[in-house]
Each structure stands twice: as C-alpha cells, then as structure tokens.
Amino acid sequence: MSRRQIQITYRLCWTLALLILAVPFVFPFLWMISGGFKSTTEIFGSPTLIPRVWRFENFAEVFTYQPFARQYFNSLYIAGAVTVLTLFIASLAGYALARIRFAGAGLLMLLLVTALMVPEEVTIIPNFFMVRWAGLVDTHWPLILLPTFGPQGVMATFLMRQFFLALPKELEDAGKMDGLSRFGVWWKIAIPMSRPALAAVAIITFLHSWNLFLEPLIFLSSLEKFTLPLALTNFNDSYGLPLWNLQLAATSLAVVPILVIYLIAQRQIMESFALSGVKG
Amino acid sequence: MMEGWLFVSPTLIGFLVFFLGPLLAVVYYSMTEWNLLTQQATFVGLRNFENALLENPDFWLVVRNSVIFAIGLVPLNMALALLLALALSRPFLGVVFFRTIFFAPVVTSAIAWAIVWKFMLQGEGGAVNQMLSWIGIDGPNWLRQPSWAMAAVIVTRVIKMVGLNMIIYIAALQSIPRDYEEAALLEGASRWQIFRMITWPMLAPTTLIIMVLTTIGSFKVFDHIYQMTGGGPENGTLVLAFYIYQQAFKFFNVGYASALALIMFVIVMILTLVQVMIRQRGAE
Figure 1 (cartoon, rainbow over the protein chains, first blue to last red):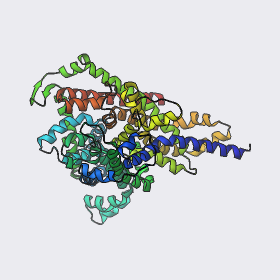
Figure 2: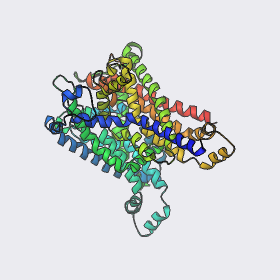
Figure 3: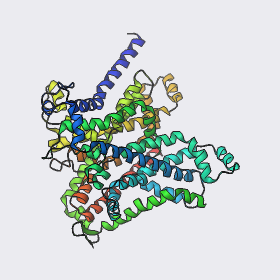
Figure 4: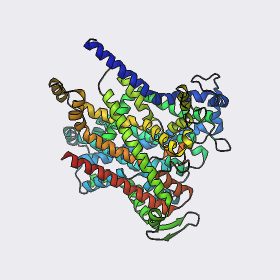
C-alpha cells in the first residue's frame, strides 16, 4: 500500500471506532423518543426502534396525567429568573474584584473560593430550615435564590472577573473622562463589551437551573409547582411502578427542545462549558 | 473604596445568608440530637460523629460505596475523555459531528438520562439485554443485583459526563504549540513518544483540574442514584450524598445527617488538597 492508502485506512478505522463508541451516547435519545410513541404492550414486547403502532395519545396523556404544561412553564421561568439575577449580581461583583481596588478584596476572593469547594449537600440542611422559617417551602423562591447565591453563582462571578481583567483599561478611562460614575462605566462600557462572557455565563446558569433536582425534590410538594426533572420522576402507577410510555414521552418533551437548541448553538455551548471547567 | 463593597454587596450578603451562615449552622446541628417530629434539639457534643464512625455499620458501607463509585468512575471518565480529545482535537471531516454527539448528554438533565438508562437496563425486554442476546450473551437484571447495579450506574454516569472532560482536554490540547511536535517528528520520534514526552506532560495542569473536579463530582452524585436504584439493591449503591439526603429528609435525623454532611465536606477538602500536593511534588 502507498503511504496515502495507509493514511486513508487509518482514518477509516478511527472513524469506525468512533462511530461504534458513539452508540451509547446517541441510542438512548432515539430509544427515548421511540418509547414515547409506543403502547405499554409494545414496550414490553420484543423491542424495535420504529414503533409498530404510533401512539400519539401518549403525548396528550402526559398533559392530563399531571399539570405538565404548568410544570414546563415553571422550569422555564425559574431558569430565566436565575439566569438574569445571576448575570446581574455576578457581573457586578466580578467587575469590582477585577477592576476596583478595595481593602478586603483578597479575603473576599479566598472566601468565595472555599464556597466553590463545598458541596451543596453540606449546606442544604440548614438552608432547608431557613427556607421553612421564612415560610417559603413549596414556593419557587428557594429554587431561584439558592442557585443564584450558591456555588454556581460564585463560579459565574469568577468567570466574569476573569473576563473583566482582560478588558482594555483605556476605554474605562475614556468613560470616566466623559463624567461617567463607576456604575455608569460598568453599565455603559464594561457590560456591553463583555457579551461573550455574559453569554457563556447565561448558558451554563440556565442549564444548571433547568436540570436542578435536589432542591426541587426537597422544597416542592404540590404538583403544579413541580419543575420538569421532578415531574419526570412522577409518572408512576398506583403501585409506584413507572408508566414507561408516559414517562418516556414526557422525558422526550423535556429533552428534545434543549437538544435542538444545543444542535443549533453547539459550538458556543461547548465553549462555555470548557471555560467554566478551566477557570471555575 | 466604598464603591468596591457596594458592587460586591449582593454577592457578599448572599454568601453570608446562604453559605457561611448555613455552614456554621450545620456545625452546630451536627452536635445535636434533633428529631424533626419532636421539634426538640438537644446538645449531644460529638455523639453523632461517634455514632457514624464507631457504631453505625451503615456509615462505613456508605463510605465504601462512595469510594468504589469514585474508583470506578474517575479513571474511566478521564481515560475516555483523553482518548476522545486526542481523536477529536484536530480538524477532520466529521470532527464537529463527533464532538457534538459525545457532548450531548452533558446538556441533558441527569434525571432524564437516568430514566432512559433505567428503561434500557431492565432485565427482561430491556434494550441492552436485547442487544447482548444478538451476540449470544444472556444479560443480568442489571439494576437488581448489587454488583451489577453499581457498575451500571458508574458506566451510565461516565457516558453522561465524559463530554465535559473531553471538551476541557480538547481546549488544552489546542493550546499546545505545534512547533514542539513538528520538531520531534523531524527527529524521528514516534507518535507514542511524542505523546509521552510532550503532550502528556503539557496536559498535566489540566489533568489535575479534571481529576479534582471529577472526584468531587463523583462524591456528589445524587440524581443518578435517586432515579436508577434509590440506593438499592441491598444498599449496593447507597452512596454518601444519597445517604445524607435520606437521613435528613426521609428519616428526619437532622443531627446525624449534619454530622455526615460535615464528614463529606472534610473528605472533599482533603481530596482536593492531596491531589494538589501530589501534583506540586510531581512538578518539582
């Protein structure tokens, strides 16, 4: 074989190996969607990827079995609120830590770093009592406040700080010459220039809140207040056994829109996560 | 001066209210006997720690399970992530396609992922056993046997999370200057030699970060256990985070659960420090 042929064979073997490796990554999604269309009898019969009978009713039943539309909306607005709040607070603090010299900033950084190291499981018990004391159990407040001010929020602060450190100082000086206050410089100059960082923080914050499970599990008890991940675990019959076809249909409804957005913006989304892994 | 504090005040207040306060509270709780039903907290000193470390056999079972989980997950996750990153760090036809696929489970909720895999791992009629039967293997009822259940949760968790480490490794690989490698190639170095002498050492800081993050992540695993096995069968997948949740919010042993939470905190801290120190010594 010529050198070129060897290279092509080599490449083909690699691609084939990757394709085989990709099966457990892709197949679950296909199997989930397919299962969502099947009847219970077909689910437990000998399985095929294409349903023999397409039961579109499953998807309608998901909405009558529990207030799924409401739960969908809950997830959406909570994740939206967490994202907006986090962007605001984290970029304020990140800016101060990067650009304003003030006594105690070093100590504050150190404290925030420890916060990153402490698992949520450690603080969730006292947080539960605090939320109960404030009368906010079975409301969405803890689901908005805890992620915003927890380790995820701290990570957002560090990401923003990292980005602000790299912004050219001259622009700020020009802003100050024009008579802008600190707040004005932050809002009118620093924020508009940090769009890539804000987008990255928004993406990981939104997904974190959207997929959050422990907090909803602990704080929520009424069905119409559930968020999606909690609702998904709730398609069971009266014996507590899963109603697989409904559960899979609901899971498809929850996962597919996120996957579509991911496929459209995959580059940006992957970059955001890489950033958070390296600098967080 | 004041400006700085003004800017960080929301973060600082949140930090005190939702983090530092609770951390101090959990230290106090851990020294009380507190049953939620009686609403009475009695100070018992280190009784809960004694109970966990010396008396309650559950605790060591749980620690053992968590360690098994980490030992199974971390090397598998990191090796696969590095392999994928090496394969996908250079542009070729289809590279974006593969990266997108291997990363897709990362953006998917852990609960959804666990639901689908639980469905696929059923003993009879499960897709995994169906496929195994094509090649003549009679698969077990994965999530009903303690040893298989742990392995199944580990593998599904690795598939879910490996894309994240892959992406971090790809970013690190792409930041290694090509000159080194080209120079080595000119001198007749093999691919393995290049990896061993250039790529691997240059990836060391990234490997450290990934190792720390992945180990901590493995000690925090909760959603997967909750949905796939509920700690069963026969407590075979009862890991620390799930056990804390159970003790606090199912059995209402608040004092005991708080003591466990503090132990978890210490384990995570020690792991982080040990790994950082090992690396620093290696770098000298």
